[in-house]
Every structure is written in C-alpha cells, then in structure tokens.
Image (cartoon, rainbow, N blue to C red):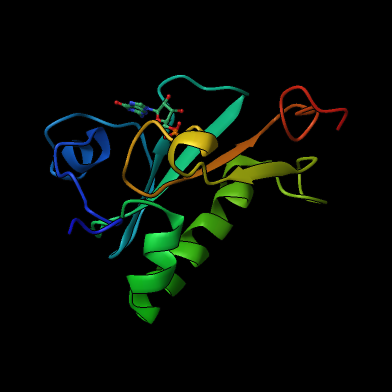
Length: 130
Ligand code: 5GP
C-alpha cells in the first residue's frame, strides 16, 4: 500500500533545497527556507518551506518534529515584518495560504506556505462574495 504522504524528491522545491535550481532567498534557518515566488500574485509573495521532506500541511503537522515545527512557524511569522506588510507596522496586513492536493490547487508537492500582501487581496476564495 502506498502512503498518502509519499514524497517525490524530484519536485521543484526539493531541487531548490539541493541547490539544483536557484532561488531569490528571503531568509533561511536550520530547518526552513523562505524565498520569493517566481510568479508573484501581489507586491509581496513569499514561499516558506521546511527543509524536511513533507508533502503537505497534513504530513508536516503529523510527522515533523517539534523543533522543525517551531522553527518553521517562527520563520514564517517573521516574513511579514521583514517584507513590510505587518498589521500596524509599515503595512496593512496579508494572507497565509497552504494549498493542499487537488481541490486545494497544490502544484508543488513539497509543503509550503504562501505569504501574500502589499495590496488588498479581495475575497478569500475565487467565485465567492468575500
Ligand atoms: P502551489 O500551487 O503548489 O500552492 O504553489 C506553488 C508555487 O510555486 C506557485 O505560486 C509557483 O509560482 C511557485 N513556483 C513554481 N516553480 C517555482 C520555482 O522554480 N521557483 C520559485 N521561486 N517559485 C516557483
């Protein structure tokens, strides 16, 4: 039986982590890497990924170590201040997205958060009233 968390190490973010593909780095820690999305949807669009091999949010939440989870969340939590989109800082807020599998519209099967801001982002879901 195949695991629902089966990880394909040929995905694009695994290649970025191995240095096979360049990235526009925002910050890096022992367990996490943040870099700019290649097709930004807003003035600020940063991807935050764990260095470990996790397919999606569910996999990461279930199987990452406490140390990896703390490192990842703290790293993601600093991006807004570092990019000037924090509430009450020099920005006006942002959105954090973790697309998961087909219905979530996940294209790259290595867990990542999108941190998006720098403009009003409109309704939460396409086709919704907001
Ligand atoms: P997903 O749809 O899986 O949530 O998001 C994947 C994101 O990765 C997309 O926003 C896409 O623009 C971005 N992306 C895909 N390939 C690359 C790449 O080679 N470099 C960077 N920086 N981003 C990428």
